Image (cartoon, rainbow, N blue to C red; front, side, top):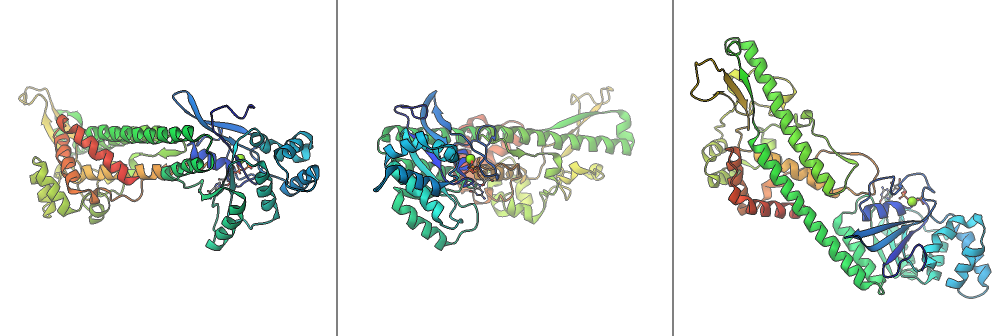
Length: 480
Ligand SMILES: Nc1nc2c(ncn2[C@@H]2O[C@H](COP(=O)(O)OP(=O)(O)OP(=O)(O)O)[C@@H](O)[C@H]2O)c(=O)[nH]1
Ligand SMILES: [Mg+2]
């Protein structure tokens, strides 16, 4: 055993030509989006030393992947190895000699061979867009001489044709136990899992360990989904009850411009709070899924353009009118309102008092569907005792509001799961797409509608929480 290999811990060295995406493959597979931990870069020769990346569950190392410098002079190295060996096929002994005796001109080759000589399996990364030339054949030949279990991965970095891939597969098939595709920039959870399962097929010696690792990975994924559903539930419950209020002075009531200014301020506050809640929710989700380069951007401005009244919103984000009416009928309390909306007789929350509200915040709900804004009497009965009145805003009366909120969250969730950790560009979590709620099965829609209605009334139905949680877990799973 050496520094690279531990007894009972399966190890795989990720090897290949410089700049093929070796580091990116490990980063995506192990969900590491930090360049301090794994450097992924367009500059060839970025990885200059071997580096072990461990998969650890409960303080126990389950499997390790060793990042290596890329082959830089494979043809020359192959010839040097053949020269050491003489006629016939070189094996581990000759490779050991090569590593011990060759000079620094083969520094990269020596370093990348070390973990293999110590017993690591081979994950060979190629970009099938590259022409299959002698230097690649030399790499394959050297790897074959190690006699280690070998899996070749086609990591498509650019455009390839089916014919290109086929000829790569044919050549790789002769030198490797298994050939698979794995796109480091787009592989999702199921592809990562499939890669782990492929390791089972080439590495018999560590079957139990690998099977256990796969089980642990699957369990953890399930737990993450449940954590995400819990966060989403909390966010919806909170957002649907959100309300802001301000005290009105006597002059606010009598001078229209002051009144409007107060109302405008309050609407800004409302949307800022809503945006803040969303931001918290997505920050928590990004943490669960270990993303640092994906950024939740929930400035109030990002909501601009969502128009709860427009046909496009109904079809893209929320529930279409017919389905909304059915859902509302089940929800009971909100039924009157929603059915109203479904038949076209929309009840506008914004009264004439607030017609003058303008600015970024008001754009959140274009078309007059501002959150219900009403004047409440402070302390109810105390009118006229000089204690003042309060102005409160939210939640919006538009029955599609909860569905739009949920759909936006689901679109972002999907974007997050599509993001591969091997990428190093910053991406904004904008959640384009959507339309998930539209296709909910009827039962799920009814459960949510009922619960939404209770939240909007300010008293979330606690006894429904287990089924709402289940519905959200199911939803997240179907999006994945
Ligand atoms: N489009 C695309 N680009 C990729 C993919 N995988 C890697 N790249 C890019 O290719 C470049 C090289 O990736 P690395 O992972 O650093 O390559 P490497 O093989 O580790 O390179 P060295 O360490 O220098 O030998 C980076 O700019 C990556 O972003 C992929 O699947 N698709
Ligand atoms: Mg690298």
